[in-house]
Length: 323
Image 1 (spheres, one colour):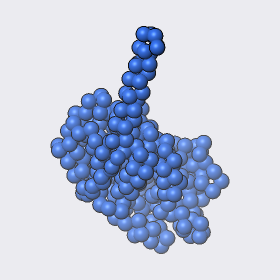
Image 2 (cartoon, rainbow, N blue to C red):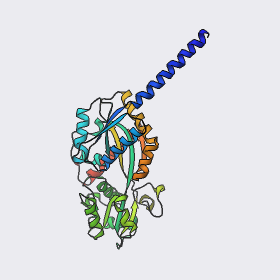
Image 3 (spheres, one colour):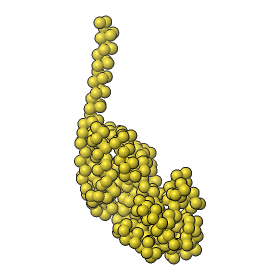
């Protein structure tokens, strides 16, 4: 074998060894995912679904999930920032609810202190009224709000959460005074549903899944979803397509601790990119009925910053956050 061929052969072997090392290193990731909520909820389900997809696809060697409940994720994020600085194997599930919770709880820890990795899923909000309501569509609801925002009562989840924010944004889009909206927070979806079905409130707002069976049974009328106008269908109308400029999604995402190196951040982002494309994750999305809204890296960091600014403005406008 000539010297040149020997040299090329050695180079090829070295390249193959490096490629093999990189592949095995990726598969050797031992990840930890914190769900900053109690078992069973949306963040916990997301963390455990990630665990399943990452291990079954071979992207990670092991994935450990822990629950740190309390204050809309405020306790969990404090632990992430204070105790996991520089840990390139740690992730935390979070979502739009946390953006509002950190503001309303006046948390000293902020999302700016985390390392944004990726947005995973989204669920759009649905606005419903009782089946016998005189309000037939988004324009009529907007007109009622503009005439007297205090007379229109809303049932939804916790104060400052995505339901409350969506109601305030609807009022603003309708040209009504958002500080005067009459929003009634309920701790459980069942209580809110009973109030809507019983005609105790004008309208209800939550994820579509909360209302689906009652809409199909003809007990609730779907006014519309907070989807982009081009996602409208005959049975799932878009509020934006009806002329009310409202578009909002209750998204879920993952962030990492502060103090990561560029290589650590890239390794976590690469792992999420691979997971998002895996057949295991795509199957989970289908089974759970979650909308795939995957965005990673700098694009997600920008979305996160924009959502924080918009949420602060809305919560200030309804008096839940002092400017």
